[in-house]
Length: 310
Ligand code: AMP
Ligand code: FES
Ligand code: ZN
View 1 (cartoon, protein in one colour):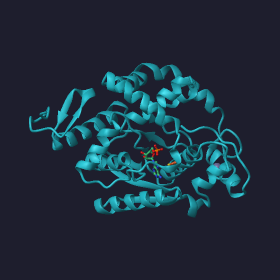
View 2 (cartoon, protein in one colour):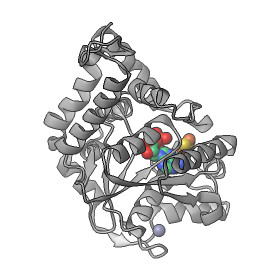
View 3 (cartoon, helix red, strand yellow):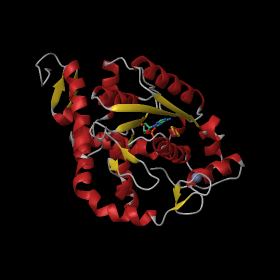
View 4 (cartoon, helix red, strand yellow):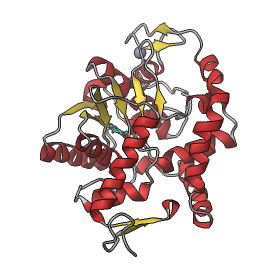
């Protein structure tokens, strides 16, 4: 196997691109793919300040590294979720990575700053832990980006993540979710702009990026995500990809270019009229935002029912 770019011995092959790369050309390829996504979806420009949500996993650490290497001003945001050893280790890895590269890391702790953790929230809601986790993270990502004056918030969702979410949204024909599933969500009153620059990158490529650069990432999956239906969707898509390489990327990119527009209005309709949360000021359709409602109930030990993830 030879590198497509320089003909040196290859270290990785990417079947959907029908290409193999040596170490340096693969790292170059990753940066090119991220650059392509940033340009294609008009995510941000060279003067923008970016806040990268970093979990300590391969995707977000690689994203932070790639954006910095591309010359963007990118700070990190780590949220301590209080999920036992899992959170302790992800915090240690994220801080070590930031320090080793001289990057600026903003930290928020759900237990210390807001008085609850995800296991407690999960035990007091009647949904999967990922629901309260997703809701809390989305709120805190948005708040940190707005409070810090950043132009955009970037997350490490990759091609496999987004294709799995798309499959779920299609299987349930969720027009509102389909309308909001896009690599860029524009800023609006009370909402920071959100982007997913890894939409063209597979999970395996991001792991390879970290291994080749000796980036020490958290390999273990979240212990609370067991049974998460997106893991099943990923398996289905992987077996499809095995039979016809490129099917997964085509599914996602065709949705962005040909399907998404049909659902844009549904996303607006579902949002409805927005007010300010009477506790934290965040936009909400009621009087109190979902985050404050969840927090109040968890702290006051009352069972609470909340919406689904994503
Ligand atoms: P997940 O929801 O775990 O699939 O993660 C998706 C993306 O959300 C990651 O790539 C990160 O960008 C971000 N993220 C997840 N967990 C955290 C965390 N604890 N702190 C900051 N960002 C996170
Ligand atoms: Fe959110 Fe596991 S990281 S439930
Ligand atoms: Zn609120």
